Image (cartoon, rainbow, N blue to C red):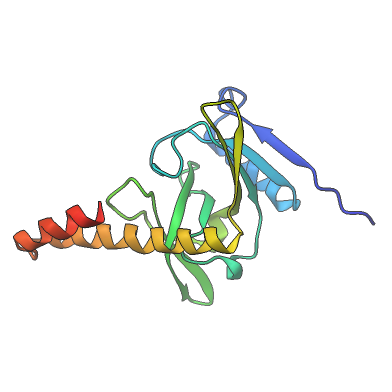
Length: 181
């Protein structure tokens, strides 16, 4: 039986009239059929990598293949959708649990179970000012390395912020935060 590489593309206007729960179910169904999903980025939690307007190609992958630095697309228990970076992973009761965070955010998200993961960002299409499009293949070794380093930096910023809020950093902490920002 030949395999088909169909892709489904959506933007915010097309999804305006359906609930977030229905949207999450639609995306879960598409990705569960081993199809690619293309969505336009909205929001600013992943700045500077994603500024809004980029087109992401998302595919379902085995959760065991997900690594620190990967961008994952999740359907959350409250029916919202989340696209953030993995900054940590562990096994709990035989299942993977992922710690995620938006690059532009200080705080960590609630842990994400493997059952909530809809897919992984495999490609980013960015429109350039001259009208051309730049494609970033997130599976390329260089991007895997860059994403890993970004995850470590992002997690470090979050931990420093947490320490400073608890008063555990001196004025030296200010210097560290400036260096990492």
